[in-house]
Amino acid sequence: MKRKQLITFAACMVFSVGVLFSLYALSPFAAEIPRFSFERNFDSRIYLTNQAVVDLKVNSFYFAGTGNKTIYLGNWTGPFHLIQARVPGLDTTSMDVSVKDLKIPDDYRVFRMSVDSPYFFLSHGTLPGIFKGSLNRLEAKPFVSNGSPFFVDAEPISPTRIALKSLMKGLKVNELAVFEVDSPYFEFKPNVLEQQVDGIFCVDGTLQYDRELNRLVYLYAYRNEYIIMDTSLNVINRFHTIDPFAKANIKVANVKSQNYTTLASPPMKTNVQTWVSGNHLFVQSPLMAKNQEKVDFLQSTTIDVYDITKGKYLYTFYLKKYKDNYASMFAFLATAFWPSTIIIWSNTI
Amino acid sequence: MKKTIFLDIICLLFAVLFVYAAVSKFMAIDEFKAQISKSPLITHHEWWISWLIPLIEVVISALLFVPRTQLVALYAAFTLMFIFTIYIGFMLAFTPNLPCSCGGILSRMGWTEHLFFNIGFTLLAVAGVILHDRQKEQEMVALAI
Image (cartoon, rainbow over the protein chains, first blue to last red):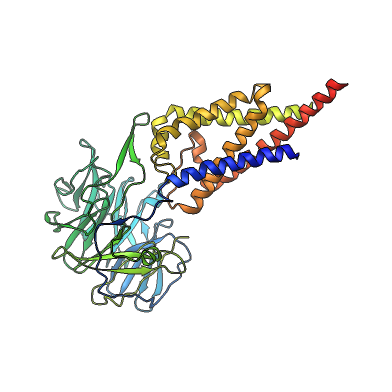
């Protein structure tokens, strides 16, 4: 290669790096981590230690449920695979379930396993299908014989009842619904989720059932509110998380040429993942508070704890990184063990 | 004359790639805009970037077939591919969610495949420049004789 060519190529490369660097400098990457106007309570001084560690080898496992001294793990890429880990030693047992008369769809990664011992539920919102079986026989049958409605999220409440989040066709909004084995089978509960922007993305959140209190908890992803419901999805209380975001801060784009709606610009999440156990709601928050050490914030996952019987914020603690990875998911066992908790890490690479 | 054929093939490959990518972006410009706005490097700038990129792609394709501007176009193609390559590398290394917005079947490629695809095309532009200069030299020699 000639000198002139080398110089020109070098100039082109410098120009390219310059262009990308300006994009970078203008992007949120280069911005300081914002501190939001709320304070966390670190008085609890909870420092978790790893009491037992299981190497799951792959990063496709997720928590499917907890039982009496047991943790169940489902797997996104092996939807019929189930692992049972017993505390405190975390000795694991592998199980494979079967589903009667099921043709496995191409998008089998959508399947989600949910264990409410002695039953397990396997759900797929776009198939759509919900299958139920017992952990003793490991064979699942359709939850309701005449089919399932489409849904976004499913959370078993009892062996005969499941809470769903589904798209209401006419209004094009997501609502919660009850799905059960007896008539009327499926019924929308349209007054639970409250629309702020588009009715689909703005009501995103996590749906979890608290087996000790018999309460269903829905926590919005983009605003500081969670909803407590009874087993028929009647709203008992609407409580607030500690961050100041009452309005979902998202932008939605209508793609007219392809006729669909999508999120525009990275949305501002206020709550990432949740777990309910006893009186407690555990919330992973991506927001840094006024009184938080930046190093702690960056080196760990921040978990806020709420008392869902009173709607009160209790305290915050950290899940430290393990082998330089953040916890990809967390679960808490019955309150009897708290705070001497055992954590299974399923690390993403 | 063999070298000319190689150079023509390289220019043609770039033109096909760029025109295809540009047309599929223009056909669904609102979708392209929505997709790139999700990228943390681009967000808030999508309104002009979504037009500029396909425009540059079309202009480079046209300039590749004008003998006087071919060399400039090859350098420009190199620069654009190099920008895309670093962009992908950056996104792979630093962001957990990877939105894809390459247009048409190009978006079927995974991000890692895309990285190698782009490196390939970047090197192709280098080969194009070398071939172009050699050809120029031969013409000069031919003229001198």
